Image (cartoon, rainbow, N blue to C red; front, side, top):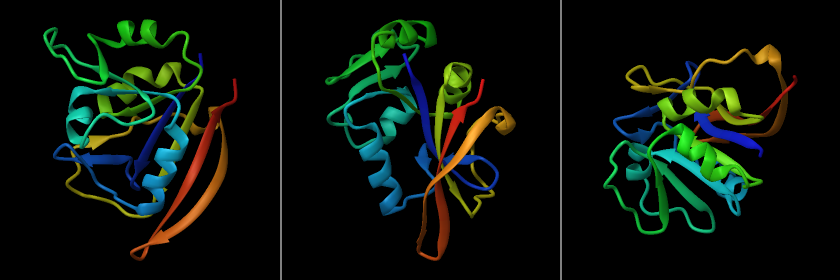
Length: 160
């Protein structure tokens, strides 16, 4: 099983504010769609609620402590252990948020796709977890500028 994480982060690892993404770039959304399509996406309930609908052409898994939660087109798992069991036979898995889910899955990740944005949001309330970048190989996949803001798509691959 290969587990990847995918997120857009600001200079201070900020990813969200008030249950929404901070950064909305056309090329980044396209990158996310192209990268995750055909795979499994795992997310927390709040991340799911921030989406307009279940993500098409992907297996959607939502982690929630609400045992009664039912979502058409998605599977609900009660925690990380149940989610890990559910994805064990999947070959292409992406953790897509939020902050707590990223933190819990970081130890299992083989790859991290980060959109590193050269901007910051001082009142962000959700962050991508810190990780030791010396333990990862860094590859710049693309560089963009939208609305006067530079950002790069970076792939971190676990070295050890």
